[in-house]
Image (cartoon, rainbow, N blue to C red; front, side):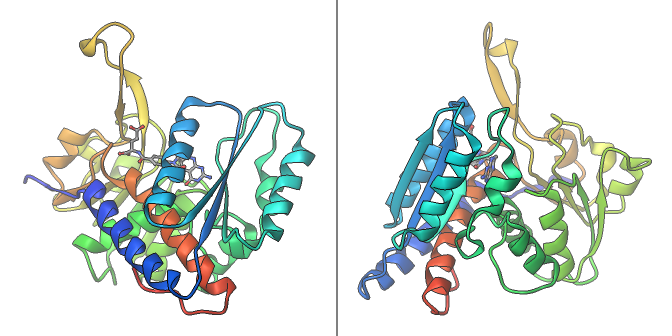
Length: 296
Ligand SMILES: Nc1nc2c(c(=O)[nH]1)N[C@@H](CN(C=O)c1ccc(C(=O)N[C@@H](CCC(=O)O)C(=O)O)cc1)CN2
């Protein structure tokens, strides 16, 4: 079998286009959604992601507010910034880029975000809403992964789904979303016994372990849909001394030979993360004003 490649880059571009159209529509009524992104420190990957978020926010017609704080900022100052953003009427969405530098605890910072502006969907309130099947803001990477899954399997009822990885940012919310779509869900992790055999049960296999190319072809059931959430930078001496390249958590060539559809990494789930952040900001901007959010 040769798998269909699920083109997340193209899907994300289409989604951003639909968001831009929706933003133009509400602009006539004087509503311009605003997204505040907070970067603490100077992690190079985080700087790139935050830069892309700011650029794409403006491209879809929203307001972008970027706050950069030094790595040694006191925790109380970071929380005070979040409090100011909570109170700012021009800000509909707040995102604190993760990971935070060593010495800062992300939990109280996330807890300080107004759940109705929590466009990362990471507060306990939004996690609880997701777990209880209530409307709320859903973490961006899981939301984007679900859109890609539904592009190849519109009806997930009864499908066997295995999610490998149990982080609050990705694994747990994807499992909740799959469950809400009536899939039969197994949440596997580093302590799961015979992980390959568990994964081979999956019609939908989601890899979110953070270990480069760990999911080999022997983990994939013939005909399965494979969603690779991993983005890992590994040495690439074949490109020259000191060079690196990005790979996912899935050994792509091996898995693609067995699966029916697969996301590449890069170019799969990653680009959906920022597009879904913009979608969540649009949703938050509507809900905060008591308006029905558009379907994008
Ligand atoms: N507060 C948050 N922090 C982090 C999140 C998040 O959702 N909220 N996710 C990741 C980083 N991230 C966005 O923040 C992100 C990761 C990857 C991509 C992406 O488009 N990746 C490309 C490759 C990019 C490259 O060349 O480096 C791809 O996969 O094709 C966008 C956003 C952790 N932190």
